[in-house]
Amino acid sequence: MGNVAIGNLKQILRTLVEASVDTGIATGAGVNYLDDTAKSWPDNAFADLIVEITGGTGVGQIRKIASNTATRITVTPDWVTVPDATSTYRIGFYGKMSGDITSWGGVAVTGRDITQDIAKLDITLSALRDAITAAAPNSKTLNDLYVQLGKLLPQENDYDYVEIDLGTARTDAALGLSGTSLTVKDLTGTASVRFNSTTKPLVPLAKGEVYQVRFAEVYLTNAAQDGQSLKLFVGRVG
Figure 1 (spheres, rainbow, N blue to C red):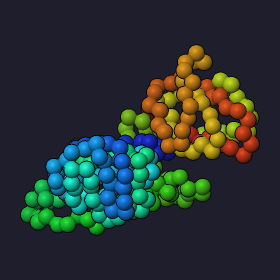
Figure 2 (cartoon, rainbow, N blue to C red; figure 1 turned 60 degrees about the vertical axis):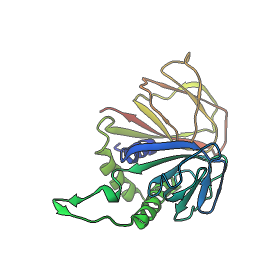
Figure 3 (cartoon, rainbow, N blue to C red; figure 1 turned 180 degrees about the vertical axis):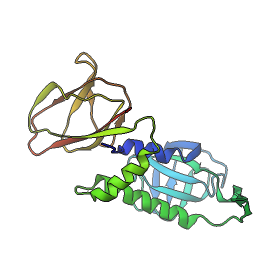
C-alpha cells in the first residue's frame, strides 16, 4: 500500500540525531523552562543544544536550549504545552551544530543563529503529526509524503492499512496479518493482540505505539465497544 507508519516516521526523524547528551524525567516546568532536581549539570553546558519532550505532557515538542543551571533548562521559543512531572525528555543535537559547519559545497560559510530554524522545525513536525492523525487527512498530501518517506525505509518497503470495528467482541480472532512491524495509528477503545500464536502473551495496544516483531499472524481480543475502532499500519519487507 506504500503507507509509512507513524512509528517509522519517528525513526526517520531520529536518524537525524547523532548524539544524545542526557535524558531524564522533569520534576517541574514553566512557560520557558524545564526542571530536573535529580540532575547536577554544569552551568550552560547545553547552551545551543536541543531538548525534546519524548513522553508525557507536551510530548513531541523540540526546543533550542538558551541556557541551563544545575537543575534547570531554559528554552527558546516558549513551550506551546508546558511539560510537567509526567514529561520525559532528552538532550542532544541534530547533525552538526551551525558553528561546526565551515563550508557548504566547497564554499566557506559563517555560523548563524538557528533559533528560528528550530522554531520552524517544531511547527513543521507538529503540523505533520496533526496531519497524519487528523480525522480526515488530506489524502493527496499524505500519499505524497508516504512515497517520499518510503524511499528512506528500504528495510520495510510495503505497508498495509487496516481498520477494524470494535463493535464485535473477539477472543484471539485471527486477523490474517503478517509482517515485520505493527503500528497503532488510532485506537478509540481498548484492544489487545497476540503475535504468531494464541499461546503467546497478550499485548495491550496503545495509540501511536510501534511493535517491532516479525509475525505470521495477529490474534485480536477486544470487548464489544459500539462506535469504537482500531486502525493499524502493517509493515513488511516486500
